[in-house]
Image (cartoon, rainbow, N blue to C red):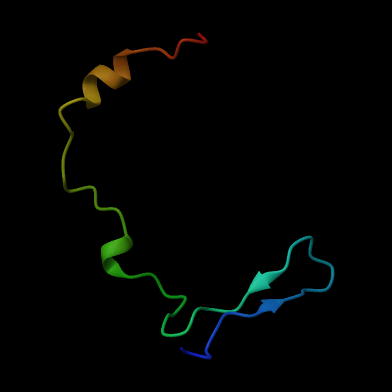
Length: 56
Protein backbone atom coordinates (compact mmCIF):
# COMPACT_ATOMS: atom_id res chain seq x y z
CA UNK A 1 0.00 0.00 0.00
CA UNK A 2 1.38 3.38 -0.98
CA UNK A 3 1.75 6.02 1.70
CA UNK A 4 1.69 8.87 -0.84
CA UNK A 5 -1.72 10.53 -0.75
CA UNK A 6 -3.32 13.85 -1.45
CA UNK A 7 -3.61 16.16 1.52
CA UNK A 8 -6.21 18.79 2.32
CA UNK A 9 -4.79 22.31 2.42
CA UNK A 10 -6.81 24.95 4.24
CA UNK A 11 -6.45 28.30 2.48
CA UNK A 12 -7.00 31.31 4.68
CA UNK A 13 -9.81 33.51 3.38
CA UNK A 14 -11.04 30.91 0.89
CA UNK A 15 -14.44 29.27 1.16
CA UNK A 16 -13.15 25.84 0.22
CA UNK A 17 -10.09 23.80 1.01
CA UNK A 18 -7.80 22.56 -1.76
CA UNK A 19 -6.17 19.22 -2.41
CA UNK A 20 -2.50 18.78 -3.16
CA UNK A 21 -1.77 17.22 -6.57
CA UNK A 22 -2.12 13.46 -6.73
CA UNK A 23 1.16 11.53 -6.70
CA UNK A 24 2.59 11.04 -10.18
CA UNK A 25 0.57 13.85 -11.76
CA UNK A 26 1.26 17.40 -12.85
CA UNK A 27 -0.94 20.44 -13.21
CA UNK A 28 -0.02 20.85 -16.85
CA UNK A 29 -2.64 19.89 -19.46
CA UNK A 30 -1.91 16.96 -21.75
CA UNK A 31 -2.28 17.45 -25.49
CA UNK A 32 -4.79 14.56 -25.65
CA UNK A 33 -7.04 16.37 -23.15
CA UNK A 34 -7.42 19.44 -25.33
CA UNK A 35 -10.40 19.59 -27.68
CA UNK A 36 -9.59 19.63 -31.36
CA UNK A 37 -11.75 21.44 -33.91
CA UNK A 38 -10.44 19.54 -36.91
CA UNK A 39 -12.95 16.67 -36.48
CA UNK A 40 -15.62 18.51 -38.45
CA UNK A 41 -19.36 18.54 -37.82
CA UNK A 42 -21.01 15.42 -36.48
CA UNK A 43 -24.07 13.67 -37.96
CA UNK A 44 -26.54 15.28 -35.51
CA UNK A 45 -25.08 18.79 -35.27
CA UNK A 46 -27.44 20.42 -37.79
CA UNK A 47 -30.56 18.89 -36.21
CA UNK A 48 -29.47 20.00 -32.72
CA UNK A 49 -28.96 23.58 -33.91
CA UNK A 50 -32.46 23.69 -35.45
CA UNK A 51 -34.28 22.31 -32.41
CA UNK A 52 -35.39 24.54 -29.58
CA UNK A 53 -35.34 23.43 -25.95
CA UNK A 54 -38.78 22.56 -24.52
CA UNK A 55 -38.82 25.60 -22.22
CA UNK A 56 -38.85 28.06 -25.16
